Image 1 (tube, helix red, strand yellow):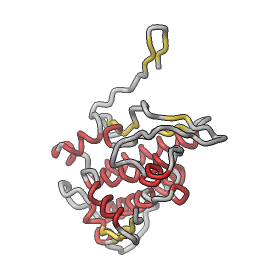
Image 2 (spheres, helix red, strand yellow):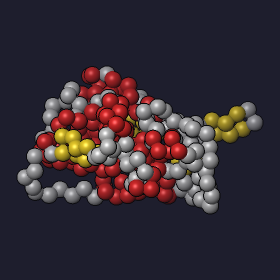
Image 3 (tube, one colour):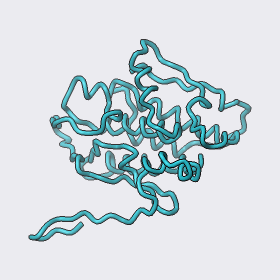
Image 4 (spheres, helix red, strand yellow):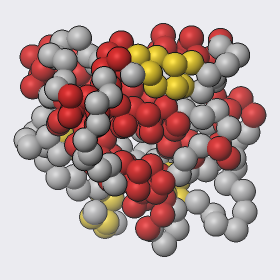
Amino acid sequence: YCSSNQGRFLIYEYMERGDLAKTLKDNERAIELDWRRRIHIVLDVIHALAYMHHDCSSPIVHRDITSNNILIDYEFRACISDFGTAKILNLYGWNLTRLAGTKGYLAPAELAYTENVTEKCDVYSFGVLVLELFMGSHPGDLLSSLSLATTNNELCLQDLLDSRLMLPDAETARDIYRVLTVAARCLEPSPSRRLTARRVGDELFTIKAREDHVDYLHAGITFPAL
């Protein structure tokens, strides 16, 4: 950053491929963003969130984790951008603030019942982002159907995948299944039951290769009723 009497500036590394939202909307660029690259983007984002929430001297909550605010460099490495609504949390009391964020990514429980912001709002938005990344578009209709449900829903992995890409091989399908299973748990409506960014990171970074004979493309992923 730069700070002087004339003004203050945040200095960003140049990210050649722009934001994730534009990439997903462009068919050619979306196809270039293959399944493995999408998995690595998930890992980049949760690594950043875990650092912000757990490794800073005071936790930082972004409050607007969306595909518009994920930038991608030439090698498809992802970074979180736009900290205009970010808040440094007070560890010893409530963090009351006005509503901030983007419709479609906001956690419904916090939106409806409280103005106390916690790091769990970023985790919910992360869950939405991961769905968007693998579906190829914002999962608004899916989230709406979950909000009307009274019980948990189980959806087939293949039905959640971006149809512009070829279906993944067995090993990649297994890894996508595990990523989306963790993302579904990030959508837990109760903040107290929602995973932390550190727990999400631990689960995603410790995915182990193993021999099994599960047809992950047709395996079900359980989503909580919102």
